Length: 502
Image (cartoon, rainbow, N blue to C red):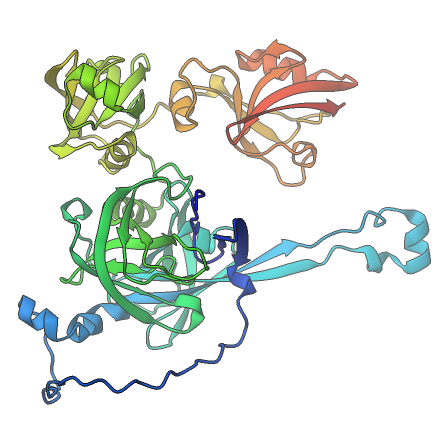
């Protein structure tokens, strides 16, 4: 097959898979409400010798050696499964409204209630991991995003309502806090250093696949630094052959010391089920998001201030980098941490804090996990010569009062808040640093701007063929009464031209 088949999430999810050259999609809410029948296969007699199982030991300890591991994972499973929970998220959406709803004739003939939009409730099922004894839980953003009600169930079946502390779609992670815990101390998993993980390490995946109940599967780390899995900002995953299925989203990937090495997130599939290729978000990113959630969020990530691209074989040959690896700087923003560190376009970053940089995604991932106010040591190659630099880990410059505008009054743009496009925002949006325009940072629900179709993240480039280079020009154009506006905006990497009536 020539097309990639990737499942982008497991609950609240759309499962994408290739079947007969086409795509098949299934929502988690499409799973049957009742548990399907389980078909048992009669065992086939085998001419083998089976060792006598040892007598049951009422008190079992964690494995102390490789020989212990070969006997059973049971002690490890017993220790870690109480910290893995089931997550139930309920979302209420406005249903379809008939086009005749506002027609007086049909309203009188059939009654107004017939055409009223009725809310629709959808549910998603996933997993989560307790990472703090106070009841702090990490799960996937796609499990709880947009939910009106979120509940969790412990491995023993006890349910608790939870509140959402932080939702971070960029990393596809969310942080929850158990409500009404009454001072109870919960079992929690410690974080492992995911940078120390190696291909071939044994791991366990724990979650609630297909809603059948808590399930444990074992496997190895099949690969590291996998990219091209999701379209988020941090496309950098651990790959494992431990069976992961829909419902495992947000569940734990643990090592043989019982530490959390990753959060299970996606699978590669042709059928909608596990084929032994699963992906997990590394624990170092998970720890960063969890700490931000506990502090009340939002998460503020470091700003590097340089655009990066892959080091190809030709580029590696020209810079004397063997084997080809690293992140090539193509543009540096003025006054950014990268510029202050002396980095220039054409430099190839090959290490960050002593860890090899295999690709731009690897650098972005590791830089984003650094603590603000610290320093990061980089190794780079310039004109074939190796050099080192120390980069400040700093927050991106915030938008000042004169760079933000809220549109009110009698205009179709009322209810919109915009900010002037800065280099930091441009980098976050994967745009050149000299990009012009304003970015929509907020749209009030039900406002004229909302009804017009503007969305948060839209970049308005021009109005009536006039380039938007400053807020004064934007406010003047949208506040002027007119028959309509010719608008050019960018949304999701695409340029959209539209005419909006006044």
